[in-house]
Image 1 (cartoon, rainbow, N blue to C red):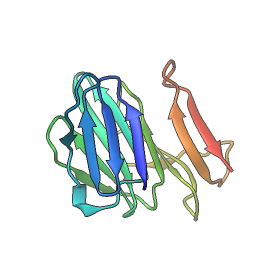
Image 2 (tube, rainbow, N blue to C red):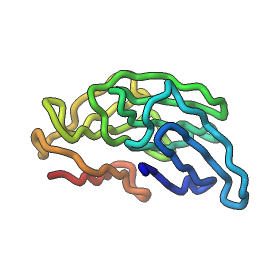
Image 3 (tube, rainbow, N blue to C red):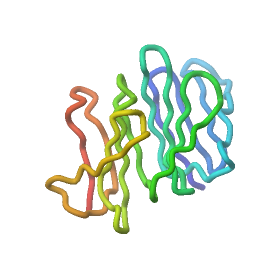
Image 4 (cartoon, one colour):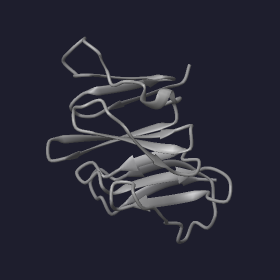
Length: 148
């Protein structure tokens, strides 16, 4: 079973194939965040906060990154060629990175406007397969990249 789990600091999130759910750490109650566009959600998910507004990004298997802002369960489809990974700055979710593991677009891509426009960010990496992305929780200027 494909599943992604992470601790938001303010809650826990799981995504299971076609379902995204959230719970508060102190609660045993789960809330569905929907199944946007009926896509397989099992690739990757990132969460950031703009003030108190939650921003979710999903690297979906349907050649797109999905974005949801606030407490509403609505999703914006942002087409992107084969995204495999996604991460964003926790306190500035307009800064988003995606990783592509194969093909002509392999490598790291960056957006500074919430995913509307992307630019390749592979200086020093070359055209490499990216397997992990993580922004340092102590310094938003440090992006860790696992690559092969």
